[in-house]
Image 1 (cartoon, rainbow, N blue to C red):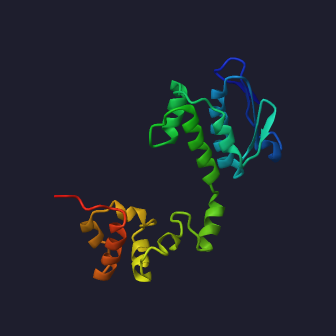
Image 2 (cartoon, rainbow, N blue to C red):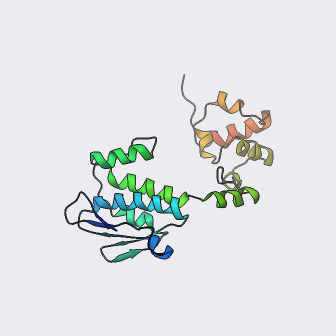
Image 3 (cartoon, rainbow, N blue to C red):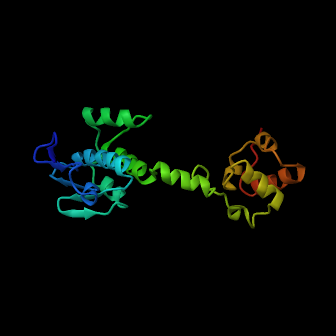
Length: 199
């Protein structure tokens, strides 16, 4: 089924249930007003929720693969959302969206991170979670920190030694697992970069 968008000369091909499963995950856009691509990305989100598969998108004859939705988002103009698109974005996102391109990137990220319930169950059974990345101790190596200090920092989600430079000394002492020796290591590291303020 083809639907004409609010923009002159713009046509968006929306999949129907009658088509084959393969063609259901293919969307088309033809037109010169690229703000209509936001409608296509919103439709892509509906398709992935319905089928569990990311759609391919054809824009004015050029095919974008289902993993290239960020490239589609990059085509949108960097201008304020019109009221009907702002309303659609407000329903989808908790935070107010600003501009076509930024909103399109956020939609593309949501599409790329979407998982079916079956995929979520498989990930849970495998013991993998996508909520927290595994922190690696490499940024702390060769900076004068002991293994105990590194482990305590990583356990508190301090993932880069640079973050220590912006913390107050009193806050450093509140980090669980840091003893006097660990705090001394951190203070020696900080002394290389942070000058003492004249009081």
